[in-house]
Image (cartoon, rainbow, N blue to C red):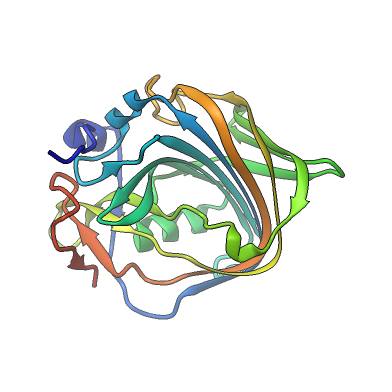
Amino acid sequence: MPVLGTLDIAQWAAGGVSKFDPWDGDAWVLKNAELLAISIEIQPVARALLPPGMHPSVPMYAVFSVGRFPESPVGPFTMAQVLISGRVGIRPRGFALKTLVNNEAARRELALRWGYPVAPGETKIISRHDRVQAQVRAGDVNVLECELTDREPIEGSDSEPLASTNLARNAADGKLVLIQVEPAYEYGKAERGRPRVLSFDQTVWRACGHVQLNQGITAVYSQCDMALPPPRFIMDPERPSSQMPKAAA
């Protein structure tokens, strides 16, 4: 039997999800983006944070993903996410628990266009000679601190960022759907190193105590141009990902 996520979709949605309005048009191009992704193995209990429409990875891991985007159609913004690793069909994907964004217009558009589970928050990325640090705040509270140490250069094509799946309510019919977000990257610089999570607020990120950190996997820092195209596919979050996905728009 296939192993599936065990998230209670109705209960999760009752805590708040975005409204997704399918669209078709040109991709958002986010030039001169600065990204940091920290990947850490977690205990299998985190299956409780994956929808039944996704399969957990083996081993399971969490990605603490932060970004600074100085150029976008709605002005500069920062973004921080916590993703729980899994797959949709054969494609690796991370289920987004929450996305903290500091720009109100960006929050509105990221929710409507891609279903991101947005909330207000501020992210700082600090590049030092031996490490890259990230600090995320929600209001006056530090909710995430993480860093990459022992920096070494790599090819950007070797970084393989984990793309997200977002749970949102489809504006067309009011149903809950999983939205696959498929960014594309053109790298100017990329580095890898050792990952460290210094602090992580389980409550703010809706982790409910299920994200129990184990061994670090990797940390990747990059400077790139990032493109966010319209979502191509949506899925029923309650059905296994072997289902045929539907066109998003």
